[in-house]
Length: 139
Image (cartoon, rainbow, N blue to C red):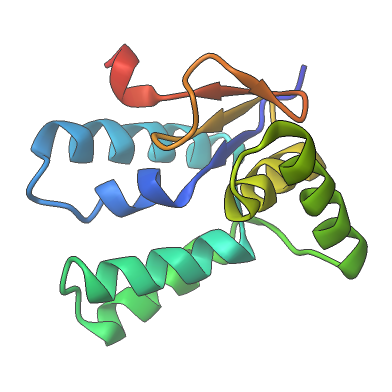
């Protein structure tokens, strides 16, 4: 099994959320742990959602947010082709999860991740062959 871990947007957002210090600490530690081993994976979708969320909902300065995205973009980033959108649509149809969540799951599957960290998807489910873990339930 792969040592790669895919991170959903919500986990990254918590690294900037001072309103939830326990989740902030857990998310930061988890991401750093995987980054140090070269095993953290995100997608272009995650980068886009992360930037939009931290600037709009958390009020992070756009320039600072851009620098954070630039750092994240140096790591393992899944990039889609048209066939991947079709695969995510199929996953959406089969599992009834939202299309955007299906894009996340497909990205994790495409990367060969052994785990998908997400607060939004059902903990302990297996979607597209990838186990979903809510890291805040294990903290």
